[in-house]
Image 1 (spheres, one colour):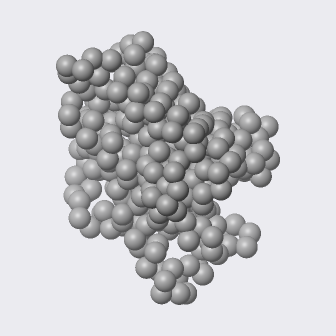
Image 2: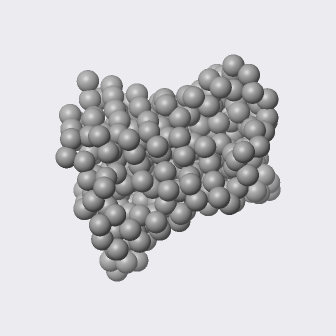
Length: 306
């Protein structure tokens, strides 16, 4: 049952990105508007889950100045950054490409800790880095050195999404040692949404709002955030973090399949090969014993919810 739950969470996250592409391309919804209200609404629901769970520590996070400072930093530099760069990358390319590019993020995490701990990467980490580079190259060039198959802006924001994911993964490590994942994620998303609310213009309802728009938006909030987050946490207790994390590496693949089947996104053989290489990269890093011991990699899977 735990295997099914972890896989289902990964698929639901992947479909969430495709729903966002549908809102951007078919309904004219602004990425900025979607990011704001996704964080506010989903953050509120996750925070309620954190507040009313057994042995809740959601209120305790505000008792010490250090914790308050760290959750505010995580909300802005972590949560807002990773949400906006990912959704904006989707609006410039497609859900499949944006999701695959974001999944290069764990490679940046490994690189950061290699520098911080002053150690050379292990052989399998070198292999993962090579696969990530080759996969990204195939995805954005289709193997040609002459031109990109996506815009330079899409590539820039896609890679920035990967870097943001690395920051989002590394920054809250200490918080996750003192507080539960629902508490950190719930407060991070809610506070980030409220901050974004003050600097954006979310009151203007952009795009065409019909039944399809409402359903896609509801999916992103409920089935693309709250429910997969909950069932993934439950799967950790059944099959363990490493196995659940490995199964969740199918998220880019699910995003690609749904984007092709539903929205008619053109995905060539080179795109599939690039996606496969990135998925293998995440799998290698997950299976690496030394990498799994890194608290930030554990944080990545505890916090994963886009």
